[in-house]
Image (cartoon, rainbow, N blue to C red; front, side, top):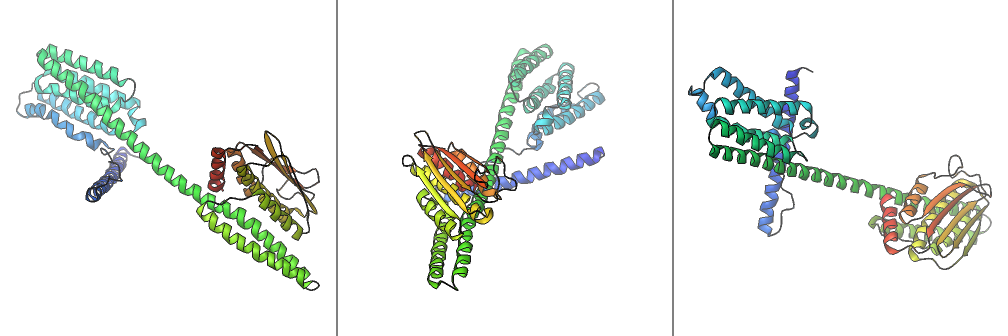
Length: 426
């Protein structure tokens, strides 16, 4: 890419940034007018100065005095003075426009340009004095725009002292004091304003990114929640429908019982889907165990349920109910099992839930220690948020086994976090 094309591309980027800033500024003014009419606060933050070097260009008017001296012929060696003035302005534009990009302002070329500006300013002050001394505050402004960080204070003090010393040698100490103070003030104020503006833009960008992530998280919650709901419910409906079809020719009453169960499961699924949309669905371990027995029996799988230990905390039951739902769904849909054992063992410290079958072990592609499908991944995140764990792999019965562990006393904040993870990550 040629240098001219690079300049054009950079100019186009500056124009885009400036148009974006103007749009944000217009939104801010509109929000402020609306807030003034309603008596509230503006809902849009002030965009601050435009994030381009155009905001610093008007300060070049401080050099109009020297330019006037040059036009009036009051400056000796006008060609040298004119060339120096053009060089200083070019370097100032180069430095200030690069100061709005963190990588560019920290580059060697920006520091070299700033050093050349210091040499030109010193030459102007020693050679001409008078209005040419105003280039020191301009140099301080460029320094503040470029050197933001721990070295800014030292650089500002040294530059101010150097400017005062040069002005004292060239003119009077009264001018030296004024120029030194103006140099220090321009460097510090410029750095503070631009640093604050950059922090505001970064915070605004972070807030927008968090909003996007919140939307993505909600979509993921809804999709995984529907997976858990519909995967289990539809599996039960399919199994019971097959059972009703098999029973209808020889036992119409048993078939009607299965059809009644299908209706009940369907109505319950509608209720749970409505609750899932609002994000406030909870379950009970006892309820899920009852459903598990019904679903397994309808699928011709012998359910064996054992529960020992003290009663569980309500929130622990909610989390373990999710595990039972997902694990039994996998048994019904994938395992080809004849027997499924569900055991809940509680101690004073922890509670363990195990769901094991004697099927083919097809809940994951290849049985191994670890976590398999989407539903199990979501369960792992839920239990981890509450301080628990989930493992899945080969079962001693020959099929597949899912083991979940939780602290016995899942407190309310941890359970709320786990539920938010369940409904947010799922």
